[in-house]
Image 1 (cartoon, helix red, strand yellow):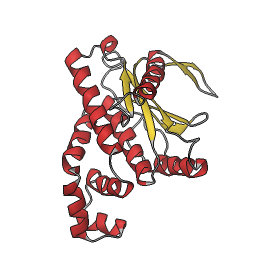
Image 2 (cartoon, one colour; image 1 turned 45 degrees about the horizontal axis):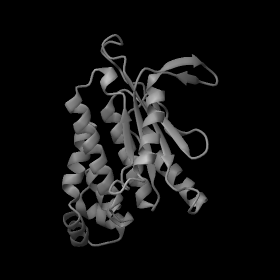
Image 3 (cartoon, one colour; image 1 turned 180 degrees about the vertical axis):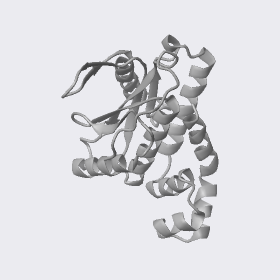
Length: 224
C-alpha cells in the first residue's frame, strides 16, 4: 500500500474543491469472494496515481480515496478497474465533487458534500446497471453544477466516462492486459512477453479491439 501524496495547490482559496471516490466490488457475494478480495488488494497496490488520500479498503466491499483533481480520480479508478478486469473481477465507482471537512482525527472522521455526492453517485451507478443497454456502466459523478462546472462540460465528461466503462466491460480479461500495456506506454514486445503471447498476436489484439482510441479517451479524462 502506498503512502498518501499531498498535492500542492497554488492557493486553497482558488481551488477548495476536492474529489472523493467510493468504490464498490461488483457481485462479490455471487462469485469467489476470496478471489475477488485478492484481486482488489492486488490492484490497490499497483495504483500510484497522485492523491490526497490513496485508495484503501473501508468496510465490507468498499474502498475510498480523495483526489485533488478530477483527472487524478479518473486515472486512479481506471488503473484499478483494468487491473481487476485482468483478474476477471470488477468494481464500480462514485465520484463526488465538493468539500471535505475533517471532523475528528485518530481515527479520521470526514464529512462534507464531496462524500455525500460520492455516495449518491455510486448508488446511481448501481441502479443504472439494471437499465437495458447500460449494464456495463461503472462510474457515476455528482456535484458538477454546484461546484462551477458548465453544463456542457458535465454532460461530455459523464458521457465519455460511461462510454469508456462500457468498452472496458466488453473486453476479455486477457485483452485488458493488452490495454494496460498501452496505458503505461509499454513497448508492444514487452506487453506480449508479460501476456505469454507473440508480439504480432498482441498487436492484432490491440487493433481488433480498437484499444488505441480507448486508451486515448481514458488519457483525455486524466487531463481534467
